[in-house]
Figure 1 (spheres, rainbow, N blue to C red):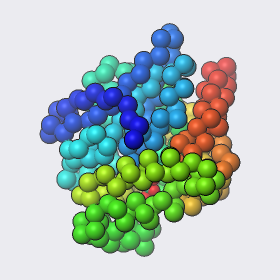
Figure 2 (tube, rainbow, N blue to C red; figure 1 turned 60 degrees about the horizontal axis):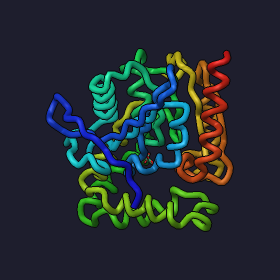
Figure 3 (spheres, rainbow, N blue to C red; figure 1 turned 180 degrees about the horizontal axis):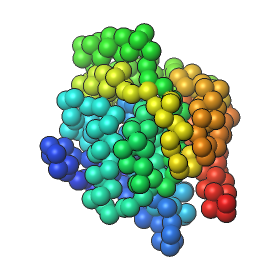
Length: 276
Ligand code: MLT
């Protein structure tokens, strides 16, 4: 399996460790993109974005409990994840980032935008939504959390395989599919349970979208079964400076499934926002 070599910082609050890779771009004034993975994944879902290092510094993390950050908070919330990331930026002396979150990473992004607006140079919201769970979805998550403690992560990986990828990725990129599924299988079942419970109680940010003042690129996958592209288009229209892009032949993991299209969309959006 492919991973980057990661460094660690210890969080002041309770000694949990966050693993990260910081690839610094030599260009003066290059922005830093903070990549925040979805559930229950890790930094390796962003390996297709490494070519962006010619234009931007890249900061890829494993959230606490995921990937190579094994220690987790037992009452995890989206806000605690956002606080962890702000502490990482402080530790590294990074004053502002373009926050790029996928799905659960996007839920964390809304909390980050509400708590730390001054740390934002922009946002990229991939395959995510701003609404909270309905009661039915939240109940399903509580059931899933109770089940995973008994079954372990393998059935979760098997079920997610059907939902995460586009038909194109499933037939043409078995290596990516296996890399992602192996990562899910390796995730601690307690982390998966806590992640479900944390997402079930996340806040609704839909009405606050108009308060976000930075530019936001909203990236959808044409074949995303978890977060439909038309819902993401509506979300982008609620933003002051939203740009919507739909990536063809991509499911829920559009940056990993179609990295070249995603990277082109970033470069176009970033280039045009620099020129006006
Ligand atoms: C994710 O990819 O992070 C999950 O699909 C988010 C969710 O379960 O809502």
